[in-house]
Amino acid sequence: MVVMIKVIVAGFKGRMGKTTVQMVNENQDFELAAVYDPRATESNLNEINEYQALDVPVYSELQQIKSAGLDVWVDFTSPASVFANVKFALEQRISPVIGTTGLTDEQVGELQRLAKEKKVGGLIAPNFGISAVLLMQFAQQAAKYLPDVEIIEMHHNNKLDAPSGTALNTAKMIAKVRKEKVQGNPDEKETLPGARGADYQGMKIHSVRLPGYVAHEQVLFGGLGEALTIRQDSFDRISFMSGVAVAISKIKNYDELFVGLEHIL
Ligand SMILES: NC(=O)c1ccc[n+]([C@@H]2O[C@H](COP(=O)([O-])OP(=O)(O)OC[C@H]3O[C@@H](n4cnc5c(N)ncnc54)[C@H](O)[C@@H]3O)[C@@H](O)[C@H]2O)c1
Image (cartoon, rainbow, N blue to C red):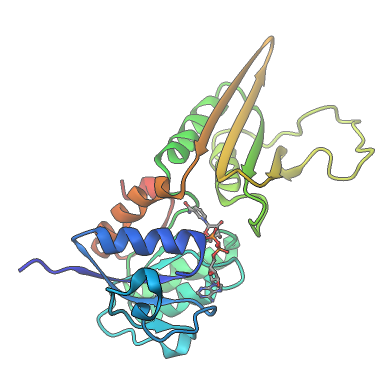
């Protein structure tokens, strides 16, 4: 008998959560074992029209969650709640697969220590899309030769955190291969505050928020008499789901918490 991976989806009422519920439900290796969202008023998914055929417990409070038997915790919630959620999952020995962005480096460090202590595998992926993972890798490669770089990320106007997790991760990956440097004119002045964007070790990051966009990023490199632009576009949330599915399938095989989908591909 094939043992299915029992998955809880946190943030199931949100945009990414809904797409994840559909993916988990359609995947024959996964069992949708529970869902969680403070916005939920139901106690079972079958009370919701579109999920009538599903008999799945719904939780609206963290402490209510019956963790016994749950294998993987998929989290697409909010920057304010993700830390407590992942901590809870690790303490219950449920493997976290985290798409929610906005965790600080200190929080990630604390969660990584907890995962090691509990010997639980987990993944925090700022981006589950393969085009974004490749963009980060290509950008890191290009920065070895073209160290002057600016990042523009574009998202829908409901996004809570800025810059995006992917943009920040891109900057961190680039920072590993180039010396910290101040870009632009050392005497430049912003006549409108914020005009030059956010700064990560001398790299400027610009965040665009507009209706119609999903998730997009451009990394611009400038050299002497030349320029290189690397761009990726996530047009539909479905593009993140193959990465989430790979993570759910594999994460129980590890005993530490990784940051970045590339570590488990
Ligand atoms: N890693 C990726 O590939 C990827 C892709 C897209 C979005 N994201 C990130 O995923 C997160 C969610 O994005 P979204 O567009 O679905 O947001 P959303 O606002 O549509 O949904 C978030 C949901 O989380 C719920 N929520 C809030 N607090 C919660 C808690 N404590 N526990 C459980 N649920 C809780 C909200 O009620 C809401 O239903 C954001 O951080 C976003 O940046 C990541």
